[in-house]
Image 1 (cartoon, rainbow, N blue to C red):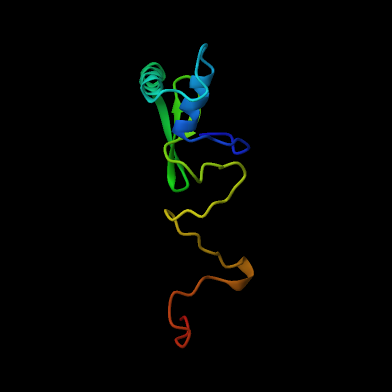
Image 2 (spheres, rainbow, N blue to C red):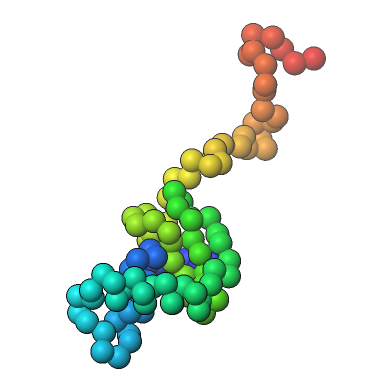
Length: 109
């Protein structure tokens, strides 16, 4: 899982970044060249770990690069994005006693 101070790119941005690090890479790669590079890169650097990201799935490759599979909502640095997976509830303070799970018109015995 990424450090929460880090911005994680999505998969295509990560592949483009790695492509441009190659010698003789084109500023605007030909689709076939980029597809071949991407296939070889992902064959060499397999998925080592998956992790949950809000409305997305994150992966850590075997070379320790991290990305999300889908674009958008990938800036996880220091955010508390709403998750639809687990509802957040409030808890009564200790001074208020136990939470009542019954109709208030009927006293607890």
